Image 1: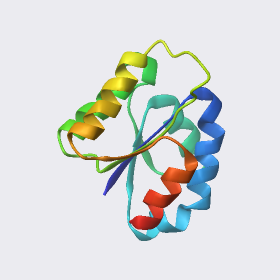
Image 2: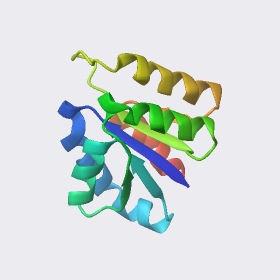
Image 3: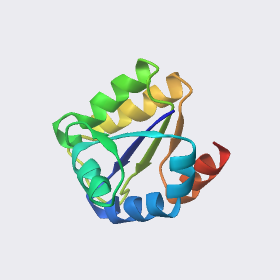
Image 4: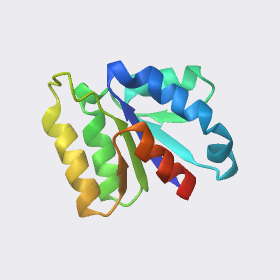
Length: 120
């Protein structure tokens, strides 16, 4: 199973904390993590194996959206910062739309992400 993890700058520490709290489940289920570039760097430093795409503003969100459309990605956990502006907002909306089109589970906050992880 492939899970994409993305976090805006103000949410990256929260993503690492979330993954640490659910490390056992991720390891037991042999989950493959993919991420946008900077999120991948932070997660990798925390000891997780992750395949990092480009940074979000440089096309990483679009790369993950393509994986969703191709049927490679089974779940997206995207800790968004709703209080900040993002120059790549069209890519973010495209990713969310493709999750809906392809019926891929999408969590945009830790509470929803926890429900999805526990359901694996």
